[in-house]
Length: 76
Image (cartoon, rainbow, N blue to C red):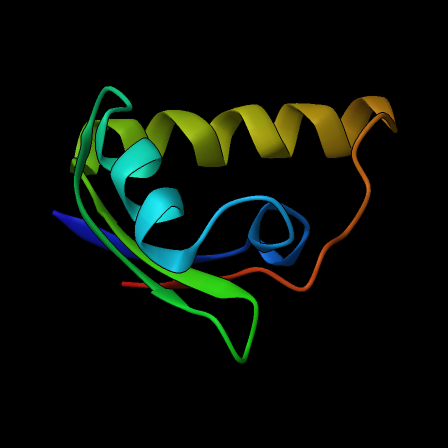
């Protein structure tokens, strides 16, 4: 299992932190999520396979020039 941090500040304006957590854990491969309401981020535990797949998709997007860099970070 891998842990990633994602920005969710835009979602917090319409959903509570608990609501965002509930929506995140419904996603395939997500085991748990914790939202930091003040920081506008979520720490999400995902399956290692999903983490690898999304990193590869990010690399492909960067190579094609279609991805924008965000403040999200990976912790592994």
